[in-house]
Length: 408
Image 1: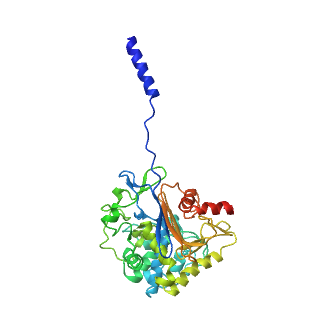
Image 2: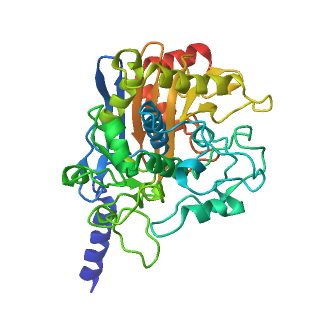
Image 3: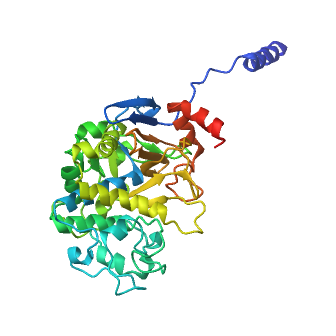
């Protein structure tokens, strides 16, 4: 009996004294940073896993849901369609849609693509902005909760509203007769040699196999897990409605393509879009008129910020684009180097993303990082998450020196 007790004591001591089994360090959040200029594209950071279960290492051009950077791509689609003579940015969208779009607070004021693309139509996301296949886009905009009383469209105070994107995309469909995903492919992706899609429609097996699963900061799957890719239904569908696009009529409800955030694209391909913007004078991707309208919208919005907007979350938002400007009253200093850049940021499902380019020297960056905690304020502000700023400083070490020197 005594010997048995001694053996148990010795065994317990052995367990206590044994070194803890070495644990593999947790992989870093999936992150890609790609730098570009007018001539070249260079991956700077590629780390983490595309999916935890498969443990597949992330690659530089793996497709990811880029969230609201999709709005910049939507604006480029509208500008290219304008160059084809099929839309006018200042025309009443009711003319394209065939039904009347009006704020209940300003029933005589037309709503235009320019108002919607610049978030100056008086819309609100409080009514929701996802309209599933089988539901009515017209009914959504007839709901007074979809609108704010902040002045007539065009003069309405800026308020970021995802709800405008389905209306823009549907108007583009109605004007062209083309489905929104196919319209973006024809006007933006194909001309730039970009492989991309919306809501995985038309991506194909190769892209699906390289999909980046989005995880929340708590570790659970937020979007694009393997069970949420084709052949699973990847569009919002009303109850009782078949997940079938064959009968879809362009110009009825392009919300199903998630134009506000549903683009899936790799960062090398996203950099190609930024590169095209940096080269507009040479590549004629947009006409001179479209380029002028696009850039002027951003500049004009930045120059006419209301006096009370001392810490703007979006500095100079115009036509699906806004600025990173570190000059009063603008204080969006993701880079902190005093250089002005334009583009768009994104935040959704634990991801932060961005495409930013300096039109002066053509240098830019396309990036994303995952497992980011939810924002405490407006979602797209580029400097709201310290991890995003730290990621830029890791990719471009000289930025840390600039911040230290300037005190930013």
